[in-house]
Image 1: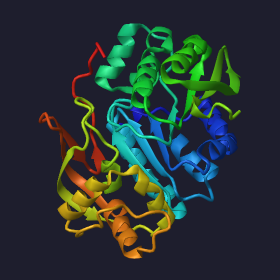
Image 2 (image 1 turned 30 degrees about the vertical axis):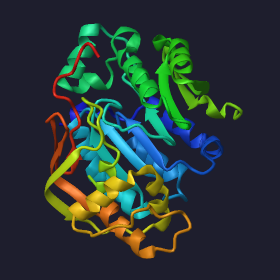
Image 3 (image 1 turned 180 degrees about the horizontal axis):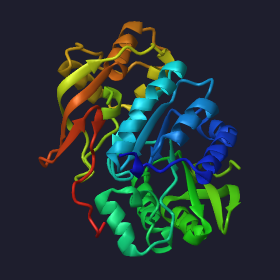
Image 4 (image 1 turned 60 degrees about the vertical axis):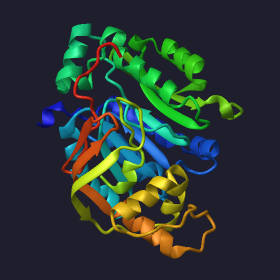
Length: 219
Length: 120
């Protein structure tokens, strides 16, 4: 059952570091710390738990919503939540869903996504999505971008009338991140900035901060 | 699923909100009261729906207007804490206007449309 949960790896920790180091920006952007975090593809729950525990250690006023397409991942995460939640009074909730499709449009929230970014045959990508098997945790289809592109479309649509939305997105160079960022800038009115980078073997992993342009004066 | 989370969900198929909540098993789990958390969540909620849910779960009548940040109405905030944070739906369903049913299994709502649509 546990085989379909993506284990924490180098990319997981790069993403956590980037978010934790970006706390000052969040504080300025939201003029307080954000009250809602939504992590897409919560998997083992490492990112959400670490962000809740270290980024907002002194701050128990945020709701964390973890979502995944896979029930076993969520079920396991939910069992593990009480230890994070009760010690530090964190409110962590889980929802099984397909990216952002089930979220009602809203403002003032942070989205985190470490997508399946490995470039694969299209067929393999669809197999993962249909069977909701472990393949779905890494198989990204053409350029490793198929789910990323769907996600970006959904995000732009969902936040069309939002003023403050912040996204932390992890991509690798194979995904051609410049194209993804351009899409978010053009279709979602997002500003984008690379905030963390690491080379792992032959792949470059990058973390991007994307935020609604209404507050573009912020660096 | 806490009742708080219910307020963030829409039907993924029809994009309508709110869904109709029909619980079959409800659990109350004590959670430490955090006034600031509640105050920060209130602006995120549809107050009419909160009032409706309060009645549905026999928590009684809530004021017609949502409490503000400087409220002194501690009673309402405590009630909201009990309703939104301590009330968990263990089993049940969420129903959309078009009849689609999203089950809640062991506290986890399943908001997947069963068929993955390749055209989307």
